[in-house]
Length: 466
Image (cartoon, rainbow, N blue to C red; front, side, top):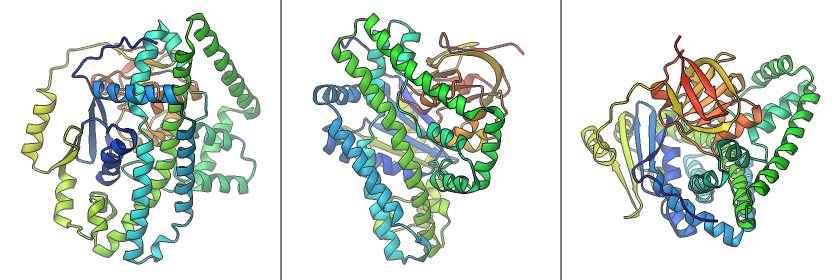
């Protein structure tokens, strides 16, 4: 397998959406020195800016590629069986923690801080293991070169393990009575959780969703059987393409490794969304003791909780405008609160903002085939995305599992960011809707309500005249 890809030096991965500080910073903590100790290489230099409840997370694609190359080559050489065992062992520890975490409301401050420390340690290790994005960037570039065309690439990078969104969807379709519906709600109560807010989903919500599903899939058993047949056909098609392209055993192993990381990225989210529920409960309880709201508590540093140094004024400054830089070369964090300094740093790092030319055709990467026209629903918020109407096209920066209500209604998906392992790529294939990812600027070029065409057969989004 030849490493022939040359990436542009100054192209940035850019993730933007609603998010509070504390859970995101805990990810940054994990991907710093703990990741360097575990993997021998830290997460690349990262620039995060919070303003008006929106986070902008930035890494250079070239840095992702270089880190991904190190990790992928290690897995291809040594395998990943033991690594998958450690993932599952850690998931068991997280489940045990969650089972033993109730009732939080009755805990003293000392007990709450102890629980926070336990959750913080689990979170750190979960995200040390969960460095899925860099291998995805590297593997995607190699497979794109090997695949020869977009159709082959889309098929080769299709995941073969079910996402938890699909498992929930299939489980719900098979609910037969009120007791089963109640158990379903207990199992999947966390589906709408994200880095900004959490919500305990009621049985009534799932009851309403089930009613809509039964209207859409009147013969659910036949539909589920058809989905299973499609899964089997995908495996056959993948093998056929690899044989036609004369893939070596090492190249076939890379395809299998990317399938594994597609599964793990989704698995990482599944447990993260559940941990977010308990993180919010613990922070809310500590906040009540200090006279602070949950939202205020979600702007503290973990060390401030552990050392009982919670500063109300500092929290309020962070809630207005805040920048965190992880400098991988110096292995240290830089925290900036001053707005002028933040803007100066942004110009220094990203350069002056370029004017965008009028574009009516936007190129991206095929995540799921198909072609259709519809009105664009443009949003960065999973909460707002729930207002999408059936048949509209979801246009956003990146989807995550809390977008699933919108995805079930959307006719297609278009994202700024993402690759073969991203959430939109996985679920769009599972739900059979066209999807284009990695457009870089769809949310800036497409306006809410625009008539657009998503061409998942050729990898374009076209802005049509109304």
